[in-house]
Each structure stands twice: as structure tokens, then as C-alpha cells.
Length: 92
Image 1 (cartoon, rainbow, N blue to C red):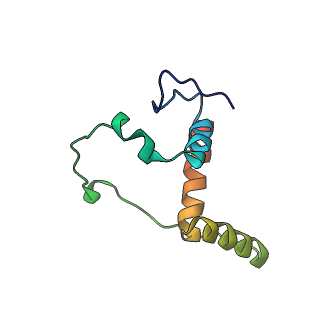
Image 2 (cartoon, rainbow, N blue to C red):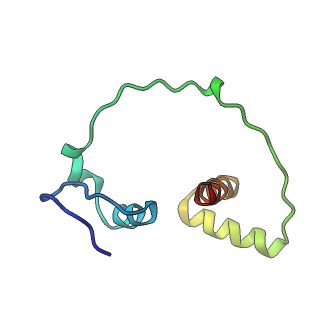
């Protein structure tokens, strides 16, 4: 994987989200603190409406999902939601 550095400890430009994820898996964000900018933001959870769906899975598949989610220290529903969002972005 090639990263395009401009100077030491400068966050490189990434060709894809996957490339960026691989970079941050192997680098410490603390080494790049001077690259981050403070932003002013307000979180308003009332603006986002959510709904629930049910998905029936074989017990073995559910066990596999739980195992993967546990590796990331997140719930299985969070893992599935992240995967769905990623996939929908990929095909959009």
C-alpha cells in the first residue's frame, strides 16, 4: 500500500476509505495531532428518525456475527448496521 506523504506526520491523501482504514489500523492518531482541526458542531438526535427491521438468520450465522462484533467490541446490531451502510454507499 502506498501512501502519499508530503511531510513527516502529515496525514496522507487516501484513494479509498479502505486505504484510510488500513492506514489508521497501523498508525497512532496521536502522532498527527497537529493535522487535526477543531470544529464547532452541535449534535441534534431529534433530526434523525430511525426504524427497526427484523432479519432472520441461521443460528450459525448469528454466532459468526457475534464473534466478529466481539472482536470490534461492538454489538451485533451495530456491526450489521455499519455493514449495511457501507454496502449501500458502495453501490450508490
